[in-house]
Image (cartoon, rainbow, N blue to C red; front, side, top):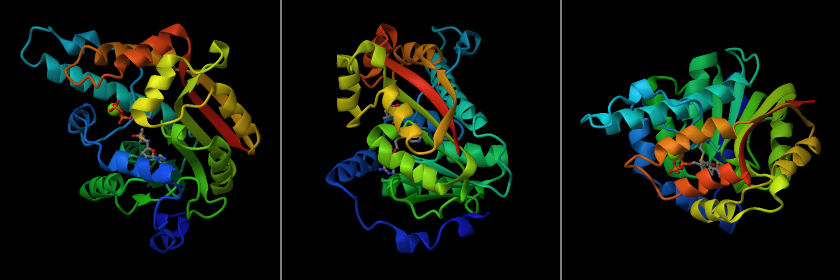
Length: 293
Ligand SMILES: C[S@@+](CC[C@H](N)C(=O)[O-])C[C@H]1O[C@@H](n2cnc3c(N)ncnc32)[C@H](O)[C@@H]1O
Ligand SMILES: CC(C)=CCC/C(C)=C/COP(=O)(O)OP(=O)(O)O
Ligand SMILES: [Mg+2]
C-alpha cells in the first residue's frame, strides 16, 4: 500500500486546531524547540531525533579529552547512541515489505521515519502536533528525495486519518507520555492490520517504587508531559487487542548515554533527574513490542 492509498485526503481531514488546550500547549512547546542538544546532533548526518540513546559508549571514538575536537567527538557519540535506539525500535517491527505502510505516532523532526524507509523501502506516515516539526520532517524527506514515501502531517495521534487496518506496523518513540493510553491504543489497534506489530520505547514509572518519584515529577514538569506507569501500559494494551511479544528493560542500556551527556557542553539541566531515577529504580526505560490480534 502506498502513502496515497493509506490516507484519504489528509489535508481535508487535518484537524483545524488542537483537540484540547493541553495539546495546544504541546504544539507550542515543540514549535518553539531548538535545543542545541538536538540540532547539533542532527546536523551530523541529517537524522534529527527527539529521543535518547542506548548502548555502550565507544571510549576509543571519544579520544583524548584534551584534544581540540573532543567535544565534537562526544556529540557524535551521543548521536550514534540515539540512532542505535531507533535501530532497536525498528528491529522489533517484524517483517516489513516495500509495499507496506508504517505509522509513526508523534514523529518529531522525522529521524526515525527516514531510518524506517531506508531500512525497509516502505512508506511511512508520521503525525505530530507541531507544524514546525512537520515542515522540518517533510523538508528533510524532500531533500533526500524520499517525500513520495515519507510524510509528516499535523494531526492528533489519537484521531488519525489513516484507514482502519491499513498499517503493517506502528510505533511511539518517546511520545506516549503526552496522551491517555486507552485512547492511544484504541487508535493504534484501529489503524493496524490484524497480525500487525506495535512498538513503543518509553520512560515509565516503576510500580515497584510505589508512586512517581520526585525525579519523575521533575521530568514531567520539564517537558510538560505525564509519564505513565509500566502497569498502565500493559493494562491498556491488553484492553485494546495488543498482546505484548517482548518487554525489554532498556534502563541499563540508556544509563551510559546519560552519564556521557552529563559531561557534555550541551547539558539541559534534566540529566540528573534521569540518572537519579534510573539508579533508584523509580523510573525505567522500556521497549514494548505487541502483536495486534
Ligand atoms: C519527544 S518527541 C519524540 C519525537 C520522535 N518520536 C523521535 O523519536 O524523534 C514527542 C513528539 O510527540 C508529539 N506529540 C505529543 N502529543 C501528540 C499528539 N496528541 N498527537 C500527535 N503528536 C503528539 C510531539 O508533537 C512530538 O513530536
Ligand atoms: C523518556 C521520556 C520521559 C521522554 C519525554 C519525552 C521527550 C521530551 C523526549 C526527548 O526529547 P528531546 O530529544 O527533545 O529532549 P532533550 O532536549 O532533553 O534531548
Ligand atoms: Mg534530545
